[in-house]
Image (cartoon, rainbow, N blue to C red; front, side):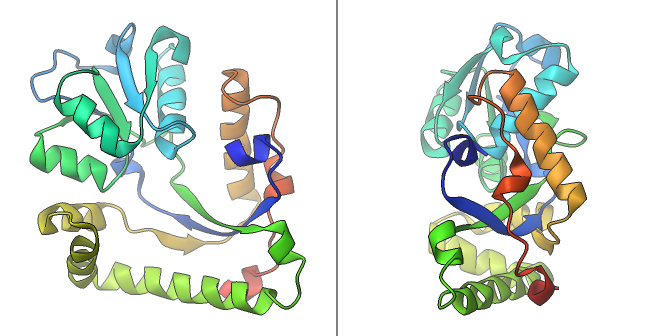
Length: 230
C-alpha cells in the first residue's frame, strides 16, 4: 500500500490469509492499561507501513481515537522489543512470532488483538517489468505454486515447521510453535472481497494523512496466475 502510494511499479500476484489474533497491541504484564481508550496520550511502538500499523489505526478509530491522540514510535520489531521490555514505550503493536516471543519471554499482556479490525491478508508481489517479460512469467508461476504448496504443508506439519523455523531464525522452539499454531497463513484468491477490504484500509490511511493521496488498490493487482494457483 505504501509502495503503491509512491507509485512503485509493482503488483500483488498472490495472497494469503492468516489469523488476526497474532496482530496484537501488547502492554507489559504490570501495565495499568486495561482498554484501548486508555492509550490516549501514550507511546506506541509500531513498524511504519506494517499490518500492525493498520491494526493500530483501525483499532483507535473503533474506540473514538485517532493516531493524533497517541505518539507512534516507528520502530522495527528488533528495536521495538528492546524499547518495550525496557519500558520506553507504553505499548507495542506487532505480529507473530514477535507477539509470541514477547508473551513467552517478557510476559507481555495482550491489550487488544486484530479481531474485527485487521483482515489478515499478506501478499506476494512482483515487479511490473518482470510481469511484462513473457520469459519470466513461467518462473513467477512456478515460484507461487511452490510457495503455496509449502504453506499448505506447514499448516499440516506444524511441529516440523516450528522446529525448522526455530533452527533457521534462532527463535525458541516453544515461541515458534506458539506462533505457528496461532497463525496458519494459507493461500486465498485475489477477488473483489479482498480488494474491497484492502481499499478500505488504504482509505483509512489516507484519511489519517499517513498515506499521501488516494491509492486505488485494484490498480496494483494482477490476477493472471489465479487459475494456476487454484
